[in-house]
Length: 464
Image 1 (tube, rainbow, N blue to C red):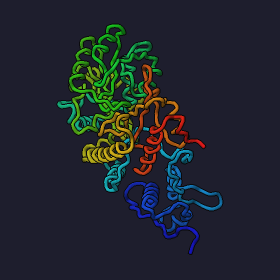
Image 2: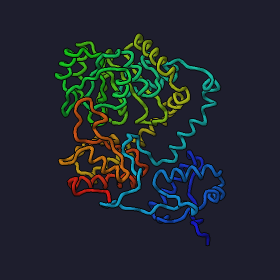
Image 3: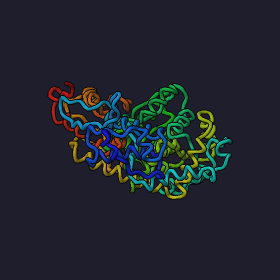
Image 4: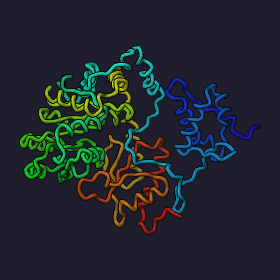
C-alpha cells in the first residue's frame, strides 16, 4: 500500500465554481467528518491532479487554500499532511491566523447549485454585453439598464423610485467618497454617530474634514444632541449607518429616524445614509430616504448582502440636479463603476439570483448567530439576529487592548472599539461571524473568547 492516502479522492462537482475551492471544501468536510485524521499524508499534487483529471496548478491552489484555512501543513521533503487537531486550552497556543474574525464579511453558504448559478452569469457576459462591455467606457452613473436594476433592488424599501435618481457607483466607499467631496470642503464639519464605520473615518481624514460625534442612547443618535451640534458647528452633512449599525448592531427605530430627519431638514443639513446592511432584515424599518427623500443621499452597497467582490453600490439622490452633480464627482474619483461587475449585479437582480443569494446569506448568518448565543455570555453581547457581526462589551478588569492581545496570541483576530471611535472608545470589540470558513472554526474562536471571559486577565494567560 502507498505511504500516502491514495484512497482519498475528493467528491467534487467540477461545474459548480472554482475547482480548487471545491477541493479545499471537500478536504475540510472530510476532516470534520473524521474520514481524514490528523497526521494523514495527502496524495502528492501531481498524483491528485492525475486522479481527478485536472491540471497541476489547480491542485496546487487547492493545497495553498487548505494551508490558509489551517487544514494542512507541509513538511519539507515529506509532503502535505492533515494538521493534527489542537483543542484550545490555557497555555496551548493555536496556529497563528487560524480564525480571523476581524473582517465583517457575509458568511459563506453551502449551496452548490446556487454557487454554480452565480458563476454561470459570468459565462453569459459575452452574449449579453458584447465586446463593448470590454472596449467602451460607460457613463459614470451607470447605464439605463443598470440603474433600472438598482431601482428594482431597492423597490421594496423605497417605493416610487425612478432611474433618474439612481447612480451606479464603484462600491459603497466610492459612493461615500464622491458624496463627502461634493457636500463638504476641507475644514468643514460632518456629524456622525460616536462609533462609526472606519471607512468613513478614513475618507474624512483624507479629505481633511472635521467629524463631530452626536451623543447617543439605546435608540441611536439623540435628537437634542444633533440639534445642538447643528447650531454650534453648522455641519455640511450628517453621516449615519442606521440599520444593524457597524459596529454596535443598533437599528434606529422609526420615530427616532423621523425626529432626526426633521432636525436635519430644519437646519438644511443633508443626510448621508449608509445602508450597507439594509437588505438583511426581512421586516426593515423605513430608510431615511423614504422618510425625507428631499435631503437624503442613500448608499446601498452590495458587499454585505450579495458579494464584496462586485464592488457595486446604488446611490439614491434627492433629484436630477443632484444626480448630475454626483455623476461628475464619480467621474472625478473613479471614472465609472466596472461595467463587468455592474452587469453581473444587474443580471442577478433581473433573474432572481440576487434574492436567492440574499436568502442564503440570511440563513447562514442566523445559524452563526445562534452558535454565538450558545457559547458567549448574552449579557455582554449586543447583536441583531439578522446580522453577521456583534458588539462584545468587556467585563472589568478586562481592557480591549489586553483582550485582543490575548486572542491574537492564539491566532484569533477581532477589532477594538478604537477603529470606530469618533469620541472616547469604550471597552468593547467587534466580532465578525462571517469570515471563518466553517462552523467548526467559528466555534473554536468563540470558545476561546468564552474561556478568556470566564476568568480575570491575570488568570487567563494563553501564552506558555
